[in-house]
Amino acid sequence: MTAHIIDGIALSKQLRADVAKRATALRARGVVPGLAVVLVGENPASQVYVRNKVKACEDSGLHSVLERYPATLSEAELLARVDALNRDPAIHGILVQLPLPAHIDAHKVIEAISPAKDVDGFHVASAGALMVGQPGFWPCTPYGCMKMLESINYDLKGKHAVVIGRSNIVGKPMALMLLQKNATVTICHSGTQNLKALTLQADVVVAAVGKRNVLTADMVKPGAVVIDVGMNRNDEGKLCGDVDFDGVKEVAGWITPVPGGVGPMTITMLLVNTLEAAERG
Image (cartoon, rainbow, N blue to C red; front, top):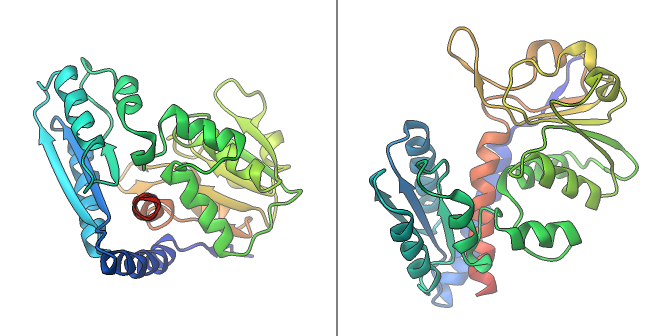
């Protein structure tokens, strides 16, 4: 049995069409949803991500401002810039691209962003809202994973979900979102003993550690849903995930590919969050 593929590109297109429709409705009321993207330094991967985010915004009828600064920008200057964007009524979402240069405290910068404009969902207030089930912005990658589960009409109630990875950006918020849908959640990480014993019990596995082949076919329960958040390169330099795709797709019921799975969904959920920030006004 070969797994069904959850196509992140197709689902993204669908969601972006909805964003464009809602953005048009807002424009008719004189509101243009605006996202400010701040890039400090010359990190090549960050430059690609930022370019993709700005393009996605424009394609969906959102207004986007890209601010580029040299790596020598001081922490105080960056905080002043964030403060100005917080007070700018034309900007509904603020995204400071990580990683930041070593002399800047990323946590301090994220906390300086107004929670009402925290479309990345990284602010402590956003994390707290997710924790207690209040409205707030969900981090884009796990939010995208939830939309993928929704797209296959997967009922999480009573299911066992295993999340591999405990980062603040993916692992922890992912576990909380699954919990909200009444799944029983296990979080695994580098200190977990006998990962395989836990993944073999899982109805859903989310792999988010940034390490190739963390999940192989012998670790997956037949018919399970496997969501691969990883972004790695294989020996040939090709993009691949955390999951041994070729092996696991012969055991799983559903699987997300890399590329073309979770990646496009991350940027799409950023657009959704920005649009919602504008709708909340």
